[in-house]
Image (cartoon, rainbow, N blue to C red; front, side, top):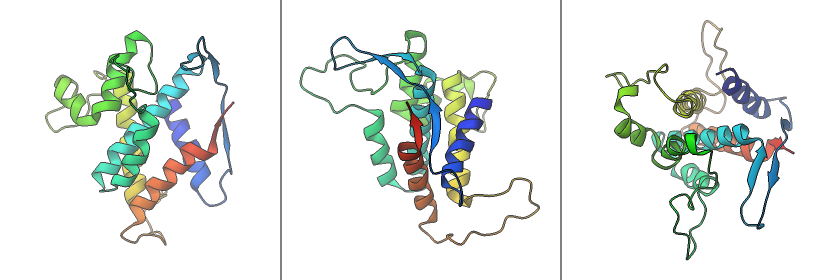
Amino acid sequence: DAEWEDLWSDILGTIEPGGEPAHYMGYLVLQSQDEKSFDVIDGQQRLTTFQIFLAALREVGHRIDAPDVASLVHNYLFMPQMQGDTGPDSKFRLIPTPEDRKIFHLVVEKGLKGIRDEHPKIFYQNGKLIKGSAPNAVRAFWFFIERIEKYARLGLIDDDAESTPAGDDDGADAPKQRLHALLQSMLNYLKLV
């Protein structure tokens, strides 16, 4: 959970006024046999977490009626299908290790509804996640959904403040604009080398 909180803080740090213009996220080492697909030698956890963040952003985009954000995110989660792409994993941009693959692809492909449908025992009757029973990918997805939705609806707030002042940009489109800002931060300001 600390790593997810760190990533969330890093993303917000590129958005907030006076924040970082870019943030270095670490190394990414790839190896390819055919120049079409790559094995991740170092950075699998970072890439997986980025994908889960994007899936959570898409989920919140659907919740707050921002289908354009959901559509933009789709292209970063899925490959365009080509003739001959017949494997069950060929549609995904990232294919994790076999032990994580099924739950990760469920998160990316079907979102929270799909997780609830296939794994109802990891949720309380009120719909909240039983964090101790959920796989890490689902816990990360839940974590980012909560943070993204709160930010989209309320903007940058001080959790320790006694009251929450309204932001200057609290018009009807502010939640959608905030989602776009998160997406831009993720795509343009977090750097992997």
